Amino acid sequence: MTRHTLFRFRLYVAGDAQNSMQALANLNALCRAHLPDRHEIEIIDILQEPKRGLADGIFMTPTLVKLTPQPIRHIVGSLNQTQTILMALGLNS
Image (cartoon, rainbow, N blue to C red; front, top):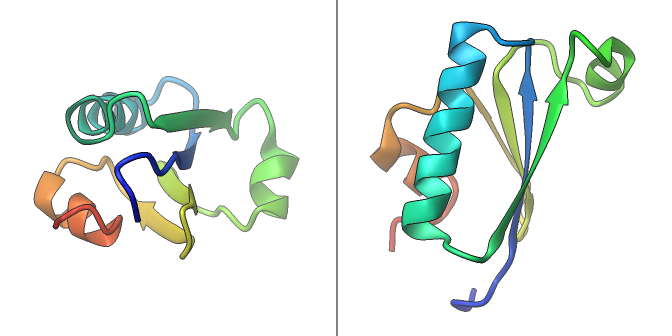
């Protein structure tokens, strides 16, 4: 993985629920600190698109999916344990 690798994330949230908003804030902070100018975040609100959540196999929110680079990873929760999240995303080096 190079310093120019683009990270693509999809965050599934449930409206403006507190844990969903916390996950979004934590993801934005993590990306600003560790992936400046090399990340994209797509937000899917399953309250607005319930069939999309079911089709994508999402049964809990918030759920973060790292789409690229491979391997795809799923992380459930508010993303508040930064070091654990960095390790799960392969960014701890």
